[in-house]
Length: 180
Ligand SMILES: [Zn+2]
Image (cartoon, rainbow, N blue to C red):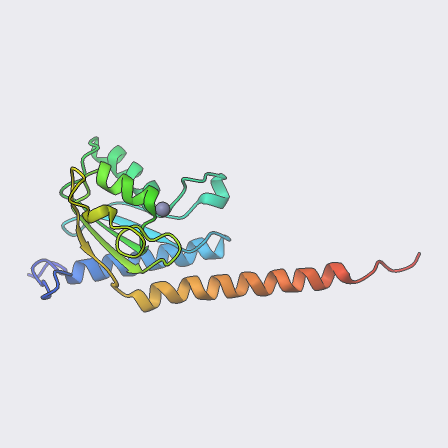
């Protein structure tokens, strides 16, 4: 009997479980987009078992810290009754920002797998290397660019549609009210 992705490790260290978890994170991100949230999803897993999962909920909770990976980290700690997540992996559709990368280090997350890079806030490879900075007391096994095209496309479509909606909104408000 074969466990999903158990021992199938590609040369770059990304397993088929990692890819399956990223697909799950993409599904969560897609759902978030349907609710008007920026589409980012995250899954925390140990082996092939999902410990916690979340999507960005910043709008819904009016919470500036409501990033998918941060919400999932809090949930994983609660589920496991343990703040150290060193035997867990985290798959997230977008490169973590400084806040989330900081939380990843503080939670001692063992592995991070992310999809699209973030040129404006990426703190794992793009702007900073917080997860792998040897000056910090924990270093993460990091894998970038897993299903990155899918992950990035979600964001591109979301922002394109939002810009279009705003443009249409402006057009509507420009129409003068009908004379009584
Ligand atoms: Zn973040």
